Length: 315
Image 1 (spheres, helix red, strand yellow):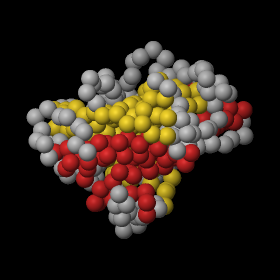
Image 2 (cartoon, helix red, strand yellow; image 1 turned 180 degrees about the vertical axis):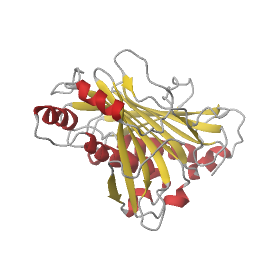
Image 3 (cartoon, helix red, strand yellow; image 1 turned 45 degrees about the vertical axis):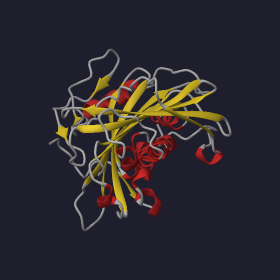
Image 4 (cartoon, one colour; image 1 turned 120 degrees about the vertical axis):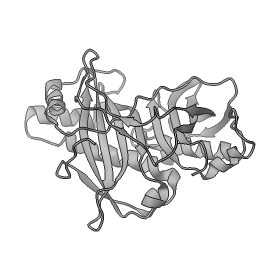
């Protein structure tokens, strides 16, 4: 197992009842909490360099992707009162960076039980968020990656499958209450929208999966998603009409979906921490999974792709 120190920089979150009381709120809550925890890596400072990096993180960047993997079934964390999040800088490119987060239980009477691993990729932009720009003081972020001895649990990169010929489609209006101060759907909310779509479509038996019984669709209404991945491509604004399409795939991964740590990323312009290989099973489920893919469109243009993975049988 990788080295890990509870003395690493972290933030404690006191949970509200709604955060984890039902399994389908878990990923949205995790993404919100980890977004807050990322501030530890870009603190307000007094030097020109510190001010520039904090300004980039707080004002001049956009989120490119989010992913998370759970290591406990819902009934084991539903009543937790506090969690602690350990953020670290995992990789730095020319215009983007990736942060990795460990989410553990924070309770004096319990060990720091691992709940989830989350990864977020951010892109530096101009002031209007329309064009990516080179990271100012990039060398400082690279040094942060290279100086970190802690080996992170790394999530495999999500490859979003192409839209199937047969899918379930529905339209909905973008709710003002799902949007943030940037006047678009908040990044974390897409996890809620994906869960709502999955559960609604399964309830209506709209998913057509190979080698599955007629009753399995309906059973998935009660199942917990163990992995979530989101790609942010465009923006959806308040009261716009959004087309939501969803379909499912049966995955027989043969163990390949475990959480792993690979070696250094050798792509040009990208520096990542060199780590040894780690393989951790999530929630003790078998290798077979159902992937629920959901895409969101506004005016015919895709704004987000999401993936939720569940055990092939009901948890």
